[in-house]
Amino acid sequence: MTQPDLTIYLAAPRGFCAGVDRAIKIVEMAIEKWGAPVYVRHEIVHNKFVVDSLRDKGAVFVEELDECPDDRPVIFSAHGVPKSVPAAATKREMVFVDATCPLVSKVHIEAERHYDNGLQMIMIGHAGHPETLGTMGQLPEGEVLLVETVADVAKVDVRDPSKLAFVTQTTLSVDDTIDIVAALRERFPAIVGPHKEDICYATTNRQEAVKAVAPDCDALLVVGAPNSSNSKRLVEVAAKNGCNYAQLVQRATEIDWRALDGIRTLGITAGASAPEVLVNEVIDAFRDRYNVTVQLIETAQENIEFKVPRVLRIPA
Ligand code: SF4
Image (cartoon, rainbow, N blue to C red; front, top):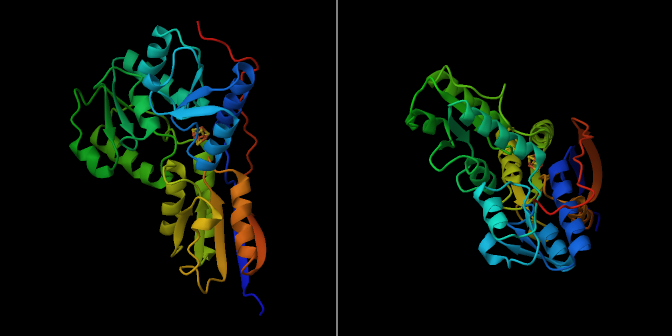
């Protein structure tokens, strides 16, 4: 039986960003330097495949510092941690390495600078996400107000509307955030913040690539994890930009073949924490069922690389 034709539009940029790449290398270097086990507080990046492969090499993933013994090194994930975490590790005289993405650290510094200038902070982010918890945790409890939606902006109760600043999570939807920032600036004209928002280059580029691909696709699959903020945003961006069926899949085994019945065009992308090997696995699964032609749709080129410390030092 001849297989049906399928054109796959492969979005680029997609997959690993510089912050994820750096965080994974830090765990690998730590295991090499100190031997197993090396503890990692929270999934180093939100991807089961990556976490499982590091676990095989000797990483132990925990949610809280309390779960780590004093005498083994611990790594803090790319999402960043509240200040209380390195403080507790220092108090316990633990060896720790901070794998926070430099673009998240930049937001932490911004928040602290505004606070030092006497401004109350508003964070645009998702409640409970580790990056939001980490950024809010740079300042004393209660100093950062969280808004998630335009509706939240109307309700937020500030100390002094003339002394406000905002920061954002790095992995938000660019379009949704534009609306929230506009609402903040309208309600609080004196609010200080970044020129647009703090959404990182990788999040922005992956969303732009999906916008270019989505209108031409009968369906679009985002390779990524259900707890990956930037991956979930890619699904939403595809749906908002004319693709009738957009789904997150962690691996080829999660593809809902029945829902894809009859498609002729398929978009594929991957969140910033999803390795390319999983994208290839998904494409190969389609090759088993379709006569596939792959077209690369590239909307930007990325050559950003973050330095990994050559020697992992024990913090003073
Ligand atoms: S998604 Fe952006 S902020 Fe997050 S790790 Fe990657 S580069 Fe850094």
